[in-house]
Length: 188
Image 1 (cartoon, rainbow, N blue to C red):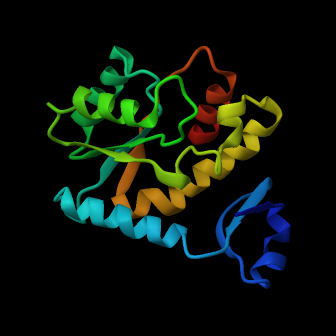
Image 2: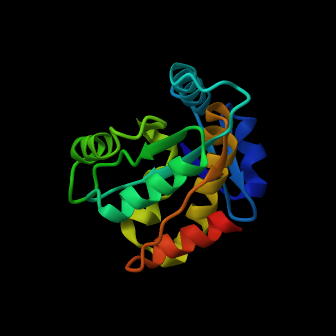
Image 3: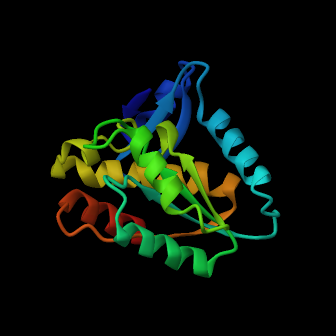
């Protein structure tokens, strides 16, 4: 993977890198090799097909770390589920939290098992990861706006379309300035 200035991305596509997303005016993310955002998008499309959500039905999504899963998380998920025919929760997959990804994923699955229109899936490399949003994990405020913009662009261009998501739901995190920047960037 390669981060560069948005206006320099074309130089690297000429060298064989593939553009993943461009968050103007901040940066562009490019990739090289067999793992690709296209493969990730195909996987998301297959998940949508398996959840039996027809192509005409739009869905909602949440990207959640849940470190740990709380009643506040449950409330937000219930709110989204009451407004959409289907809701996808992309669990942040990085193992940089107090609880492991496996434990957080299990908490999310068990905490939403009674909500029939909710599907919990791993977020992968392209949803709030050290690749797309490293300052989320390091709390580097001076980089968080650029990283947040890149993560938002990836969600809009690579995650929402295959899942047919037309609305993303956000919670609040009063103790994290980086999350506040992220939420403001998402709203914008």
